Image (cartoon, rainbow, N blue to C red; front, side, top):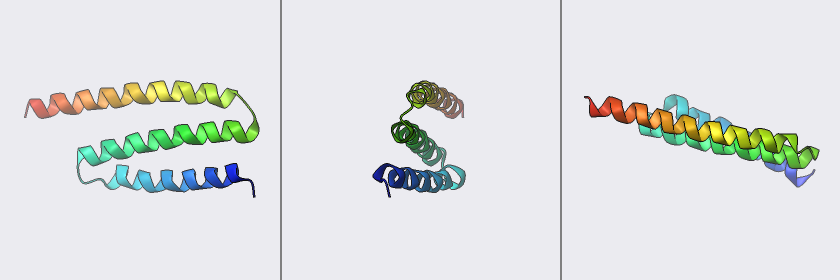
Length: 87
């Protein structure tokens, strides 16, 4: 089997395991870390799929996904930080 396909399967499995941390995380910090890990793994998956299929379109999607993921994490962090400051 192709090593890239094996990596795609491994990344998919670890992404599913990381989603457990996002859903079941006992604290907001655990969920934030899990969400960051999932976003990084999906980015890696997109790059691996681009390499496997030899399509640069997936690299463009990965770049946009990374930008939106970063902005989303900043927004969530700001919201949680402001909410905890007012308590």
